[in-house]
Amino acid sequence: MKPYVEMTKEELQELRKELSAQYKEFQGRDLKLDMSRGKPSAEQLDISMGMMDVLSSSDDLTCDDGTDCRNYGVLDGIKEAKELLADMMEVAPDHIIIYGNSSLNVMYDTVSRSMTHGVMGSTPWCKLDKVKFLCPVPGYDRHFSITEYFGIEMVNVPMTSTGPDMDLVEQLVASDDTIKGIWCVPKYSNPQGISYSDETVRRFARLKPAASDFRIYWDNAYTIHHLYDNDQDHLIEILAECKRAGNPDMVYKFASTSKVSFPGSGIAAIAASENNLTDIMKQLKIQTIGHDKVNQLRHVRFFKDIHGMVEHMRKHADIMRPKFEAVIETLEKELGGLEVGEWTSPKGGYFISFDSLDGCAKTIVAKCKKAGLIMTGAGATYPYGKDPHDNNIRIAPSYPTLPDLKQAMELFALCVKLVSIDHILA
Ligand code: PLP
Image (cartoon, rainbow, N blue to C red):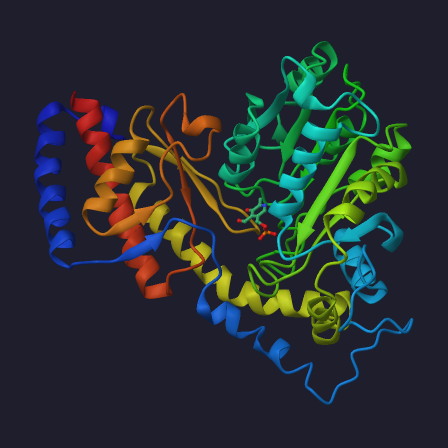
């Protein structure tokens, strides 16, 4: 396939005519395809339906230690759930607190508490003139929404194939005490599907922040979300590594079972050092009498242990893998060699990231929409919705059926071609 930039103006105009006819044909199909958010498909939700049957009215809802899950009590989570989530998060059970149904909610709470009450005795951030967060880009829009909501200034840090640009992170964190945090999705990142290298994790653990209340927000949302049995990414465990490096309090680790069981009805947790957990508990005991223990018990009885969870994730992978492969295959077949875009090939997680020619992403997404395909808004992967190159588009393959997905990707590739030709000819 000849790169578009090497084609003559006449060749490109001829090609545009052909592709426009194909686009019109797509418009005639009256499609309603949605690839905008990383939601599991109904087929994936079905594999967790057994969870509805593990507790019945005749069951004893008492934990091993005698806790009656039907009643108030146990602020930091039932022991069985702490063990299950601790294994999932690769930490010791006494280093975690089980929360409610959403890890994003825990992250919001963590920022909110730091704003109003500070971090382990530091000045509350709301009393400071300026508070900044580093944001590896492209990244997760809802992280950026939280920091924007609290008026925290966001500073872009480019992602590389091994994680955020650590030279820049080290330099910024060491020289600016208004930098209080960094958003990280260390494994199968949203949206690129990149896993941080060992060196990146080691460098994170050895940061020398100017601010004593600087924290790494380590959102390990895709910790067990592999696509392949025999080709999986593994991370150095950050809590242990921070401890080894003499920075035991520098990290909060977040995770949930949202994309393991039911999004919005799973269980979430934070893992952190004892000092951090003590600080968090001071707020938590005011905030709630306890989270949903019945749901915690339901998860424990359904998965039993981490082996049950890993087995369960294989079923998710069997559904997700063909979808990821269909996206990559279509991109390669339709756009390979044209030099109008680049894309990632993740081994897990929920997303594939596509980089178009600079200045084309918004127009591509708009063109898809006009033919009935909703993609994540261009710019959403950057703080304030501003992609400085207007080139990044997040592809979320999980929700549509496989036939719909194939159709959607053909349409997407067609829109990339058309917009790229217009861009080159302009
Ligand atoms: N973190 C990341 C990186 C995500 O991609 C998502 C959902 O897409 C979440 C957190 C949301 O997690 P939860 O459902 O636990 O709030």
